[in-house]
Length: 182
Image 1 (spheres, rainbow, N blue to C red):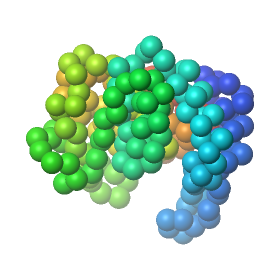
Image 2: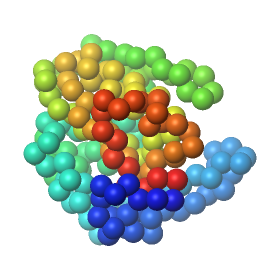
Image 3: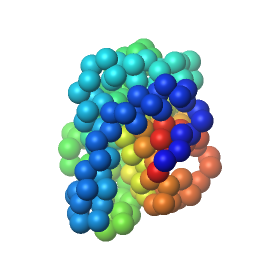
């Protein structure tokens, strides 16, 4: 584990101390890092949102949460920043009109959707999620935001699983901010 350097040591310790490691979930051989204890602790969760808001204040016009834990992080962050919240959802969960992107997963393919009328032309959009793994979902979100007329300004994740190559998959045109990297 390493810290990304963009966030103060106190936020790194806050997130790390509230993670629960679950072996063999969702499949044998996988070590799942669960953020539920972090979001269940009102003081810790509030402090995390405050620190993230300090980091992005004045730099973004909207926050896009990725289904589903990105919604949990994105909504209070958008409120703290005084900007709108966009929802990037799995296919078939938003009423139209929607823009959609198919993308590859390590085990198949999936589709993500966004309602384009929720994105203001030229809006700087912070994409937020709990984990960056292969980069497929975040890359799809970037494509959707661009299709809708916005500009992905950064990706913020609590955890980056570096061995899965998500950062390399996404390239370098959008900054990637990870609190912890494994």
